[in-house]
Image (cartoon, rainbow, N blue to C red; front, top):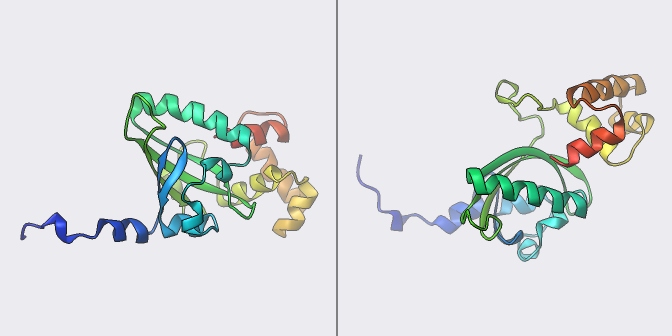
Length: 190
């Protein structure tokens, strides 16, 4: 195999057209992102640049708390990954798998690289962590996170209220919580 000259590669084009969402951030503000990230969050790439990640979290509290927790982890392990609920720019909540790398360990939010993969039925359960949710569990949980009752969730998902209750019970057991409010807190805190 012939040696490859890295100067022949258009790295910016590769970044821009990557099939997963990519973001470069400085102090939790997007300094560049690719087209897949803009599409995933239903935004315009140009408008997303300069936006703080707070706009992509369910609320300010989760942005702040997640930032503290992630900073501690990035200082000790350099990389971070988890499944979390994020908010599209049009307000819809959805599940993503987020992976990140701190480029400076002494100040982990100073410069970071983030990869976002939407979890829409593509999650391989054999590789899933213990707390991973099934597609339907994510659907039901997202309805609760929007503040809907079981009856409203059932109507939105086109399933029976009893089915929603079954999934709610599974979620409560899986996360060892006793109420829907506690479940929502656990899920949004990542």
